[in-house]
Length: 487
Image 1 (cartoon, one colour):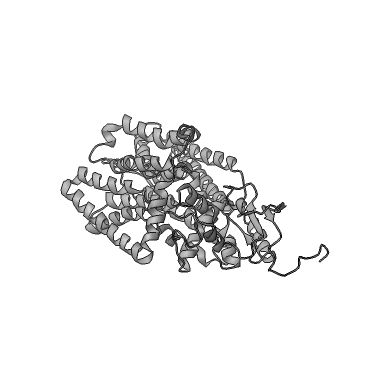
Image 2 (cartoon, rainbow, N blue to C red):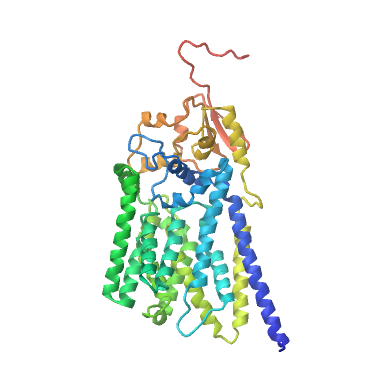
């Protein structure tokens, strides 16, 4: 049986462009992994996993414990646990970055591979691969470059919704409920997945089915809450998961926040809203495969927007779009398939995905083909030169590895201050290097100014590689003469 040349040419061209789009996505992910260690936020976010692994308090008390910046549920830290087995801080971050990439890409891939096609239509293997490639290209870049509780919450929400829409037994429904509740064990604002699943079942299967799912979610919530209370001090849970997040102030410039995030918001909010409005007869139909992700987008929006408008909030707080995107892409490709120029349109979609990845690669500042870990090699030298004397306010992993000690994190101190729970001077000094005379900050990194408040008047500033060092003569024990200038 022969194949006509025109068909063969179109088929070969589509496969080639699709392969190029997948390769571009893989290249984008590789670069994200390479620059992952250079972001101090990842160091700060991973440090609590080490506390959990070593049996130390994950949630510090009001007046004791090293203050970190983890004000979320413990579940993401369990997924990042393997990073605590690494031999150095640099390798720990590389491991955590790989885990972060894997779980997100795996969730996108599984949903694109297994999500049902609309009734009366089908999706080819190429369609599903193309949907995954486009989803990765459009996915918020911060997800691949930063450790965030939201990342794990979205992964669980995607898997939970897939289990529910594919559910053919109570076991699958229980799995969906557990995943939905587990989102809350990642980030407290992830209640939208639970609400959407219950509403969807109410629409598609009736009130009784919705109430049964509500019961499943309640049981799962009680079990998870009981495990947390058994594992951590209740007052510390209340302080770190409820009090501090709720008392963080709203941004003083809400309009500026919206303007700064306008490009991202136009994609996350405007595009789904237009699709749901223009295709409302299909989207909001009881049998629609887009009903559940659209309800999830809608239910997740209010808490996400509230989190976005808190001080320090940014696009990672907006989970709605990522719950909706993979199924929406699959439906879009099904719609394209019936067009007489489908091959050309699909080729254009693949080229668009490739172009988006290329633009993103071009905009990366710390561009590298190899993991950026040189600053950790320099930090190891500094800790050997200043044992028990140097504080890394934004890189706690350095001294966790070099001295097996957990010191305060500046962002954690800042959160306490903003929430009206600033720590005392005695509490601050209890978890700083015992003979502190050096403070090391990443050059050009974030600085809230709190660490610099610990500097004495005679402190000097110097640059060492990728670090900015503030140093001063350490205090001498009583009765010990000061060193001579030539000693």
